[in-house]
Image (tube, rainbow, N blue to C red; front, side, top):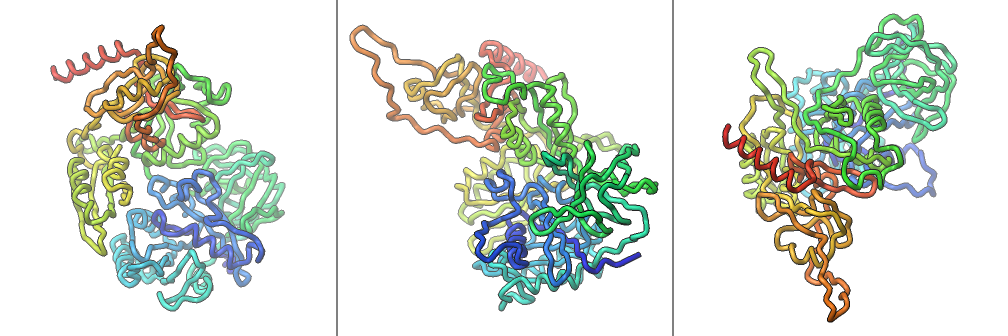
Length: 615
């Protein structure tokens, strides 16, 4: 076995918004990745348009820098619990991790999740207490809380004796004490080189690599990324692809790359211990082993936690179908191909055929996980329908009892809004674990069933005027805890086709709030707003003012018309009722009833109520 002292492989893990990507920016700038005169933006690795819009990391990214002759491979990971699958798979490539913790907030739900995964894999963890310049920073208390978390998660004595670095990622400063800090990140790099073990490999064994990440290049085709565990891989060499189904497929390494700074460099030979990328295979899957033909055993596959929420994706069946998506991209064949291709790289996602040929059941970690997939597909040009999210139940094999997923919910809210949040969580049968107040902010921890949380986030934002934060993390499966609270208000539903008019909207706006304004094409069964009462209300939003022979048609005015509510994809997913579908196209999001015909829908609703009354 050889020690590759010129390489370190690390992942950066943390709760959402604790500064991972910003810290990577500082590491890249200090290692002179950019010219002195070059203008560099923030969150350089968040290259995806959705990541920049939402300010979060969605996909794990690879980069590498050189410090004092040592190559440091860095993997930036998502911080949101819904993208935990990204974290689980990339931790297989590294020997150590930088655990970022906010100097004010301390360990948060996702901190617990990512740390547990890192400790299970035996990684050397360096704790970085970030943002020590924030008002009310409490570095010493946060360090104690982090140590308690290590012990709670069963860390070994060696793991619990972790090194600590204090940092201001935005300014690119670090130090061994909160004050003073060095002028750059030298203490952080020194700690990485000293504490993270170099790869220990066998150069003489057959080459073996576990595919951990997939990319696609228009010229080179499918690109696989992974860590070379043993041997040497050369450009042009013959290899075998060992799939998780036990197949051995012959192949050839057409291109070989290594990461350097923000780009890939083409190389002829890769040595064990490095994180590399390769091309030459038409079809690759996460967890495939690429190996020398002499290798007999594949590497252990990547295991991720099971999804807890599912939605049904279907072909768009609305009267406006086919107008806004790419031609031919709305078919069931295209939709099926796109969804199943997603599972090749998105390891936490599951796709299954639905009850009919044009429906597919897609399961993921949460509403945000599925929402990002929906938004990505609509930007690619697809149009389709999605149903309301529903939780995935399990059966206890010993007792036959049906179990449902429970989540740990952490809330930060101003003291004067705490009572409203307590009432909201209480109505959703939440069980309080902890509650304390500090510096005018109340911190709450609850256990709540996942199905009670569907639709909670938008209510929470309204109740706290957008000033609170809520995070959730899967906790466990438990017996079903009663009926979920229904939606408090019904829908305003258009009962005829046409174009909405200001005249009609002004006349019925006292019935609720609208999602559309004037001059919007509507169809029968389309949801155009939220009713002020619990039941649905059919409305005519295409009504025009009658003309007489005494005067010409007046120009329509919007005087007195309340502006419509701007609904995002996440808002629609949370607002949707069981009998509704969301029509997703590249240009519009439209909520609609499953049964568009008003008379048929009312008959079905009457029949359902009779069945409920009889039961």
